[in-house]
Image 1 (cartoon, helix red, strand yellow):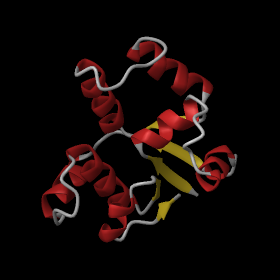
Image 2 (cartoon, one colour; image 1 turned 90 degrees about the vertical axis):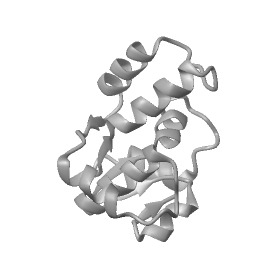
Image 3 (cartoon, rainbow, N blue to C red; image 1 turned 180 degrees about the horizontal axis):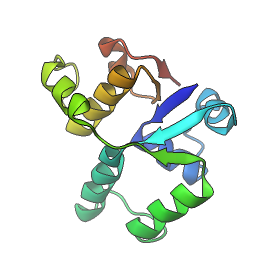
Image 4 (cartoon, rainbow, N blue to C red; image 1 turned 90 degrees about the horizontal axis):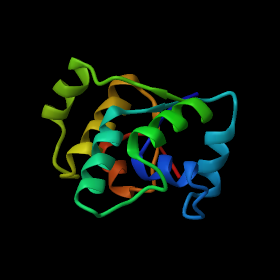
Length: 128
């Protein structure tokens, strides 16, 4: 199964945070699944760090490079189709980063690992 990982799920997995659900952890550690992260997640994280709303144990570029090297995550680029789909999404969720993740999930027909229940309103296959 191919799955897109929401920002918080990515962080909680990489930092061994107990907030990650058992189901999410099982999906993310199952070698049969292909795990993808969006540049939107790294952009969101960069903004939160610059606003001092979040901090990491190492620099953001070190964190990203380590995560991509050590975890089985694949960077998935944002395409024109993803951007165009955002324009047609209803405003169940106003967060631009989550809207991009929803769009990528819908366009690619991938499940998304997220604890954000509002994403269900978009008809995505949300795993938590």
